[in-house]
Image 1 (cartoon, rainbow, N blue to C red):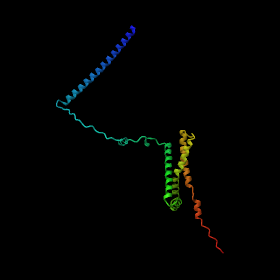
Image 2 (image 1 turned 60 degrees about the vertical axis):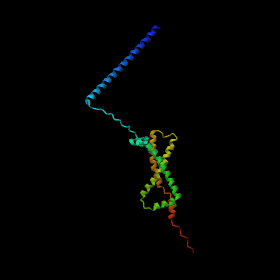
Image 3 (image 1 turned 180 degrees about the vertical axis):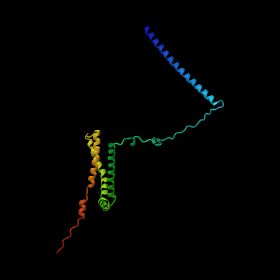
Length: 218
């Protein structure tokens, strides 16, 4: 029992010595800092001279304008996050955006055709005949047909590509890029095939054929 009490007293004494040493070191540091500050103030007073006066002028606090989060970013020239400029251009993201753009173009086209049929007296056949009567080069007309068929062709091919993914196939990175390049090629092929179709050729040929003259009665 006496040995345990002696060990406890030794530990307390050691802790008191350590604490006293820390306090003494801190006091020495503070005194050195105070002496350094005093020397700086004396040297500054000696340089300024006895006639120098130091005036303290109170200035009103500057009130910062209250800006919203977007206004602050615009003032600092920061881009909205996430922004398209910070991402690297990739085939997968471009194809994903294009399939949505093609869907919007088809939707707007359907609305235009439907509203024009309701509000206008002319029909699509009349518009097609007027376009045929215009003196346009055959190449320019074919290019226009391909451009009109591209949204439909790409939306069809891209939508089929997305539907195939639901069967858990072609989901690895090389296969996704391979199917992406294949979708681009098939889009142009399908658009060219649609552009070469001539839906009204039979009707136009029938209209151009002269009607047979009635037989003369004897």
